[in-house]
Amino acid sequence: MDDAQLYEVAFTHALELPGAEERPFAPGWTAVRVAEKWFMVATERQGQQLINVKATPDDITALRQAYTSIQPGYHMNKTHWISITAGDDMSAQFVRELITDSYALIVAALPRAKRPYLSAPYLAN
Image (cartoon, rainbow, N blue to C red):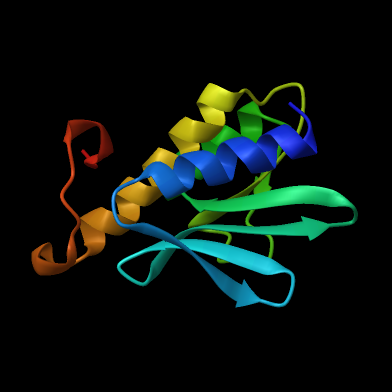
């Protein structure tokens, strides 16, 4: 997967999720939010596309050990966020799964009244 594919897959999938909206975050950064909470943040760093998503601390450790394209969250809380870059170890399906997991973590923490209607694939365990 190259930078263009990473960006396209990430934003296409993130914006397909119920209630998701793209919003500017800061100069050079774009966030995708649900109910005003970000679940994906993107920027370019050193000429490379970078996507930040939320994950559980246990998953973060395992993901960082298993994938060279996953690093601690750039400019984010390293306990709860990871950065995804393009690489041979990233597939479109896996990027979509990471984004869906991030979305589900955010939605699960929302008050019920603010949660978008969710079907089973988007519910956190």
